[in-house]
Each structure stands twice: as structure tokens, then as C-alpha cells.
Length: 390
Image 1 (tube, rainbow, N blue to C red):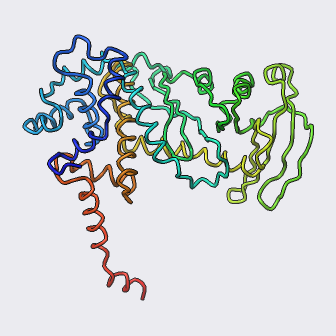
Image 2: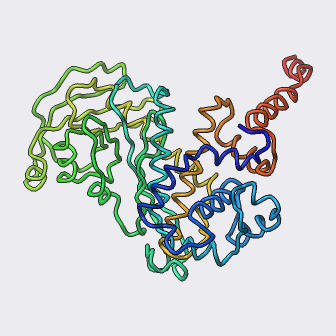
Image 3: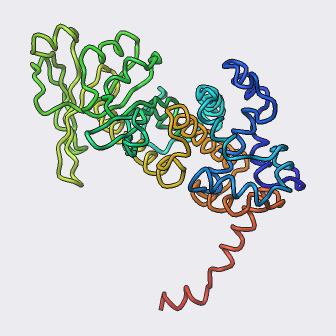
């Protein structure tokens, strides 16, 4: 990376202009635009994410304070609060959604060999879940959730092996999780791991007919008849591996074929879990391990809520909210790409913290993070370590 560039410009250099331009052209994002283009909007919003700005006013004030440097960041015409607000409300959010998918595809390729999951399968494994972000009903009237509350729900599909979000569907808080199964396009041969909130036999059968596999936690009131029992090694925590068929009239009509039921005892927490899957080939223990890795999506939700600006929104309309969320996803993936391409040993959190205070620094990113690592190593006092060992 060019040492003459600001750190922010170095990060944005990871973006392929042609890929971004295709997304803009697809939705005519720059139509009737003279100065403040979609690219300028993306740069401003990404800067707000990386610098942890609290509001649109905060973001614009910060950029105005650095006005002489904006040209070198790619923002040649300056920024006004009203202009950025209008862009967030009017520019189609699908521009940034499509561009995020382009970045995600690149990131998944870079992280394809990463697998600390315990999963021994070559199949792609997805975890599906949602998280709710509560809002003020008086402001976000379109996102009704409860009588006196508003909320948006992020339905997310996470590639478990590379820990990258592959699909994000944003709805109001009233939309039930299971409805997202009507929107997803299922990948043949892939595993979809879900909690019991997604139990809907008709929709699960659609996954089966698509040639995909699911692993889902069974509800306590599951009505099913055992057809056959397979032997299990109880020392691994397995309690049973059975072929079952649904016994309810409507359930059997919606899902007419057999299912596999695996019961697993978690010795650490003293709990028993029952899983259902339409795959009869993989080892029963792998079914339990697949579901165990579903918690990665919970960790992902926790991480993005702590480190990205998606809890407080910089616009009131549905389009502004979706644009901010998708640009936040783009920022997350760009930092992930930077980390992998430069082979940084820092965690994502550490990289974001360092970048947030160095965006107007002209130090090459490689040297910046290497310097931080050296400083961190030099602060370790061997004498102090010896003292505590005595």
C-alpha cells in the first residue's frame, strides 16, 4: 500500500471500482446526481463506521474539521449534513447490499481454509438466526414491534467455517423468523443449522426437496413414531440415533418422509438436546457438532452490535436504516479482507480500535499494525513476569 495515502484511503483501495460501479448502475444510483455520488456516500458512511461516530451530525462535523484532507480520501467536494441525509433516504439500499455480497464472496474465498469447528464434512455449513434491534416507535413508525416499541430484525445466514455473513434480510420486528425460509435460495448439498424457532414442516420439506440438509433442534412437544434405532457410543454423549416419522396428520402431510432424530447429553451443562435432520449418512456425533457451531452466529451478532454502528441509526426511513446496516457489513468484510490479505495476527476488534484513531495517518497499514504489535510486545516486562512466578 502507498505510504503517501491516508490509512482510510488505503483501506478503501481494497474496493474494486468496477464492481462498485456495476452495483450503482444496476439501480441507477447516480442518476440526476451532479456532485455527491454513491461512492462519496459510501466513503462517508464507512468513515463513520471505522471512526465510531455517534450520529450523522457527529460524522459531518468530524469530516468538516478535516476538510483539507478530504480530497485525498476521495471526497473531493466536501460534505453537508443535509446532502448526506438525503442520500441515505433516497439512494437505493440494494446498491450496498449487492456490493456487500461481492465483498463477501471475496472474503469467503480468502477464508475458505479456515475451519476450527470440529466439523469433518466438506459440505458448506450455514447457521441461520436473527437478532432484534429495538428502536423508538415515534421516530421509526414503520418498524412496529410492540405497542410502545419499534424494532428491526436482522435475519442472517452465516457461513460457519469462514464465519462470514452470506445473507442478511432486514424486516420489522413483527416478522417471524420462520418467514425468512420463504426468501432464501437453498444451496444443494449444504447444511442449514437452525434453532427450534424455525420448525415448520412445510418449509423444512422445501429444504429437503432442494437437495439441501437441515439440522434443527426439536420442540419438546414433537409427535413422532420411532421406525428404527441405530447403535450409538454413549461415552461420546450420544443417547440415541433413530429414524422417525411424524405422527400428526398435518405434520405428516407437510413432511411425508422420514426424519433422523439424534439425542445428545451435554455433560458440561447437564442438559439433553434432541436434534432433527434429513441427512442419514453423516455420523450422529457430527449432527451434534453441527448444532454446537450454531452459536457462532450468536457471537457474530454480539460482535457487530458492540463494534459496528447498527444500534443507533443516522436516518429515520427504512431505506436509510437498511443502507447503514449494509454499509456496516461492507466495512466489516473490508477489514476482514485486510486482515487476511496482510496476514495480521491482531483480532478484528484490535484492528478496528487501531484503525479508528489512525484514519488520517499516512503510515502504511502494514507498518502501523506491526508497530502496534511491537509496542505491545515491548511492554511485557520479563522481570515482572518473574516476580509473579516467585
